[in-house]
Length: 291
Ligand code: ATP
Ligand code: MG
Ligand code: MG
Image 1 (tube, rainbow, N blue to C red):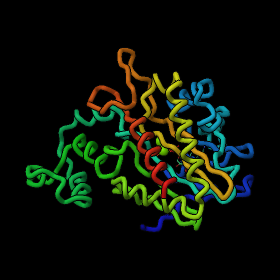
Image 2 (image 1 turned 120 degrees about the vertical axis):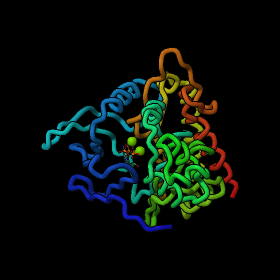
Image 3 (image 1 turned 45 degrees about the vertical axis):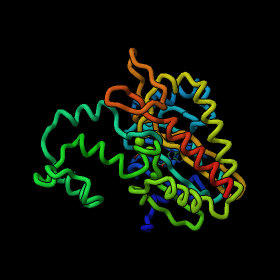
Image 4 (image 1 turned 45 degrees about the horizontal axis):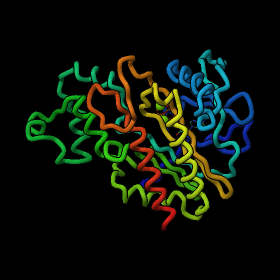
């Protein structure tokens, strides 16, 4: 595993280092109130948080405390800091779903038929056998082709989730899970993540089952496509819990469409595979409890 330095930030108001595992560093700041953080405002995400505060899912998302304008004039969402009740927390971000781009983004990419040399290069760096003969000949791939392929190098397309980042108790962090793909590799990574914290495993499993049951009752979940959203796992010696985060690409399902979050995705059906990912997570954590 390649060592990677996460964005550790020791804020004046917070007496603990805050850890950010994904996203741009500039998107987050310490919040004005104790136990809160600020995330750069994205209107779509704010709409989701407002709905979630009235949904049965509320206990499973960070509390939304409204908008804040910073000195720089930028708008931020003030959110509950999920790490604030933990002592030296271990953190893992799992991005849920069988794809991480919106149908709309794929449609836009399809309008551009230009062959991309940069994407071809990225492709052969990871798997020299991935391009077709013709793609090899032209040394280029189209953007939609690249987008669809990229979800197959991690566990996203097959297991319906991927590990996006981990910070363990020994302080080491890694974002190097781009090609962590098989169930065995994931199980190994979860084992390492919970190593020496065996009491966290049953707590995580219980929380995952609670989330699963609540999603089934949620109006928000029934009516939204969740793309690029994560489950944030946090534990220390005493506690372990999981929250749903990152709704920047969570959009209402079109009026004439129904999704069950479980049916295989086909271009245009809007399925996100959220429950495929969650069920695989539950099954892998079940295996861990039997180790
Ligand atoms: P990306 O789209 O690249 O995943 P983003 O900018 O939309 O990133 P998020 O995914 O919401 O940002 O968050 C990035 C990271 O910040 C998470 O992986 C997590 O480590 C941390 N984080 C986000 N929200 C919270 C929160 N409420 N409490 C504690 N940590 C958080
Ligand atoms: Mg994210
Ligand atoms: Mg995001």
